[in-house]
Image 1 (cartoon, rainbow, N blue to C red):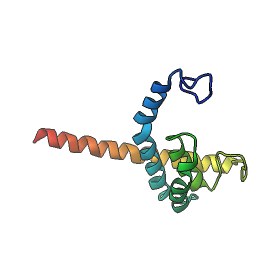
Image 2 (image 1 turned 90 degrees about the vertical axis):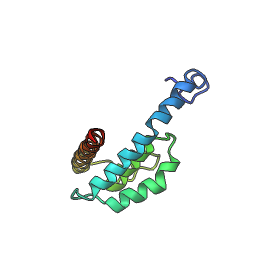
Image 3 (image 1 turned 90 degrees about the horizontal axis):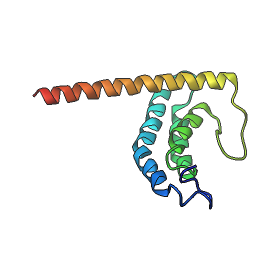
Image 4 (image 1 turned 45 degrees about the vertical axis):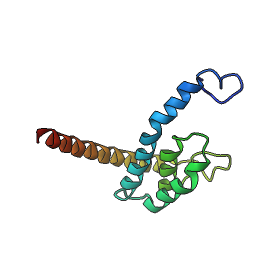
Length: 126
C-alpha cells in the first residue's frame, strides 16, 4: 500500500513509489519489446497488433510501467486484459498461447543477456 493513490496512503511512501516507478521504467519497456519480438516467432499470436496495442494503450493505464508488457501481451493475444468493458474472458487456449509467448520472450532475453555478457567480456579482455 506504500504510495498507493488514495488520500490515506498517498503521502506515506510517495518517494518510494516514485523511485520504484523510475527504476522499473526501462525494464517495463524492454519487457514489452521482448514480447513483441517473441510474437514474431510464436504461432497463433499477432505481433503487429501487439505493437499497435502498446502504442495505443500504454499511455492510458494508471501504472506508468505495468501498462507496457500488459498491452503487448493483450495485443498479441487479441484480448482486453483490463478496463471495464471486457471483450471476452481468456480461454484455456489463450492462456496456453500467452505462456508460449512468455517462454519465447524469456529465451530472447537470455540470448540478449548472453550476447551482452560476451561483448563485455571481449571489451574487458582488450
